[in-house]
Amino acid sequence: MSTSPTENEMQQPSLSVHGTGYHGWALWMRQTLAILQLELVKNFWGRRALLLYLIAALPVALVSMLSLLPPDADEMRELGRLSQVFAAIYGGLILRTLIFFGCAWVFMNLFRGEVVDRSLHYYFLSPVRREVLVVGKYLSGLIATIILFGSATAASMLILFYGLLPAEASAYFLSGIGARHLLTYVGVTILACIGYGAVFLIVGLFFRNPIVPALLLYGWEWLNFLLPPGLKKISVIHYLHSLVPVPLSEGPFAVLAEPTPAYLAVPSLFIFTGVIIFLAGLHIRRMEISYAGE
Amino acid sequence: MTTNLAAKAEAVSNGHAVLEPLPADRKIVFEGVSKFYGEVLGVNRVNLEVSPGITSLVGPNGSGKTTLMNLMAGLLRPTTGRISVLGVSPNEPELLFDHVGYCSQFDSFPRGATAREFVEFYLRVHGYSRQRTADMAHAALERVSMTEAADRKIAGFSKGMRQRVRLAQSIAHDPSVLILDEPLNGLDPMARAEIIGLFRRLADAGMHLIISSHILHEVDMMSDSVVLLHNGYIVAEGEVHGVRDEIGEHPIQILVRCDRPQALAARLFEHDHIVEARVHDDRGGLFVKTRRPDEFYLLLNTVIVEQNLAVESVGPVDDDLNAVYQYLITSEGGQH
Image (cartoon, rainbow over all chains, first blue to last red; front, side, top):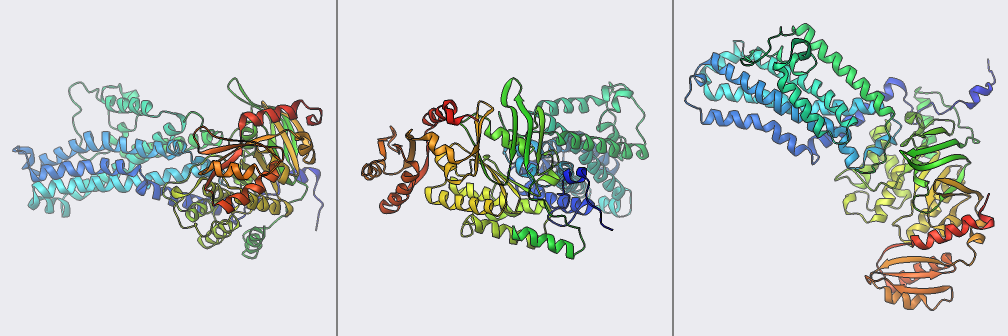
C-alpha cells in the first residue's frame, strides 16, 4: 500500500541514510574503529608519544638500576620485604605519579592537542556523532596507556624480583602468590588508566589550559591520606589503593578509613568513568571551534 | 556524484539500507541568525535562502563570511535564529556531513601525512571500507590534479598544493553541498582557472556551492548569485551579473608576489588597461592597478609562461578592496 507523504514528512530530512550504507550501531562501530586506528597511530608514533615512552620507561630504568647496584639493605635480600619495596615503588612512583601524569598527557591531548594543532575541525566536519568521537578517542588513549603502563608495571616487578632474588623469584612467580600479585598490580594499573583517563579527557575538553587543574588534581590525590573518610571517596586513588595486593602504611598523619572492597571499588570506578564519558559527550555536542587565541 | 550514487546502489543491493532520493528543491536556509562572540558581532539578523548553484559570500575581512560558513557547518552555534541545510540542522553532524563538504581556511594537517593518507584518513572516519576509501580518495585527488603528488608528504607542499589537498578532502565523499572558505587563496592563475572550472562543473551537476571570496573579479567569473556582507550584515544579495557593472571602471589594485617584478612590470605596461605598476618596497612583488582584472589575469598567465616567472601569490590589496566594497555598498545598484 502506498501513501503520499504528509507535509510534515516532506519537511523532514530524507538524509537519514548514510553514504556508507551502514547505520545505527553498525555504523558507529565502524566509525569508532576508524577513529581508534587513527588515534592509536598518533598516540604511539606522534611527536607527543616520546614523553609517554619516557614516563613509562622511568620505573623500569629505576628498578634495573636497583637490580644492578643493589643497596646494602635487608629489604633487598628477603622476599617478603622486597614485595614491600615494590609496593612502595608502585604506590608512590608508578601509580600516584607516572600513571597519573602519563594519563594526563595522553588524555588531555586527545582534544586539547587537536585544538592546539588546529586539526579538530576535520573530525567535526565528518558525518560522525560527536559522542562516537569521544568514545573512539578515549579507547585509543586507554589502549595506549594500558599497553605502556601495564608493561612497565609488569616489567618493573619482574626485573626487581629476578634481579635481586633470582632463585626465590622463580618459586614466587611460578608457584607462589607472586603471579597473583603481578596480575593484581597490572589490573590496578588498567583501572588507573580507565579512571584517570576519563578525568583527564574531560579536563582537556573543559579547560583551555589544563595544566593547572591537572596539578590541583594531583595535589588532591596525593593528600588523599589526610582527608576525612567521606572525602577520600571523591578520588580515584582511594579505590585503587583499596585494590593493591600489598597495602602500605600511609604514615602517622593519615586519617584511617576502611578500604573499599574490590566488589565495590571496581564497579564504582566503571560507573564513575561512564558518567564522565557521558558528560564529555554532552559537552562536545555543544562545542564550538574557532581556534581563536590558541 | 556518480561515485556516491554507485555506493548507495551497492548498499541497497547488500541489504544495508533503503534509499530515498534527495528532493532537488531543498535549500540552505538562515532564519534570523545572529552570532555574537561575547560583545563582538559576528553576523546579525541574517535571513537567507541559498539555492543550488554557486553562491558567493563577498565582503572585506571581518565582514562575517567565515562566521556564516562556520554556522552553516555547525562549527559555531548561532546566538539566535535557526539554520537548516537541505532540511538538516547543523547540530546533527552525523546526518549533515554525509551530504556536506567544507573546505575551511584552517591550513593544518596531521603531522607527517601524505596527501593520499590525509584524504583517506577522514573517509575512513565516515565508515567506508579500505578499498572504497582508496578509490574515493584517488578520484578526489584526480579531480584537483594532485595524483602525481598524492604520495608525497603534505609538509613539503606549497600553499596552493595544500589548498588543493583540502579541497580534495572536502569533495571526496561526493557531497551535495560544498562550502568553500577562500578556496582560491594561494593558487596560481592557471590553477585558479582549473579549480573554477571544477566548481562550475559541480554546480552544473546540481550541487550547492557556497564560496567565500574577497576577489570580486573571480566572484564575477564563477558565481550564479552573490551575497554581499559588511560588518556582519547582509547588505545586498542577488544575481551576479550586476557586480561587474557596479564595479564599473573602478580600478582594482592587485599584488603579484614573484621573483622578477621589474620584468613583469615592463611587460604589463604594453597594455592600456594597466593603470599603474609599482614594485613592492621589498622588491619581491609588484602592485598592479587595472581597470579590467579578468584581462589582467589572462595576461599574467601568458607572461608567467613566456618569462618563466616564479609566482608565489596573486591577490587584490585589501585596502583597495575595502574601497571597492564601500563603493558597492553605498552605490545605488549595490542595494537590495
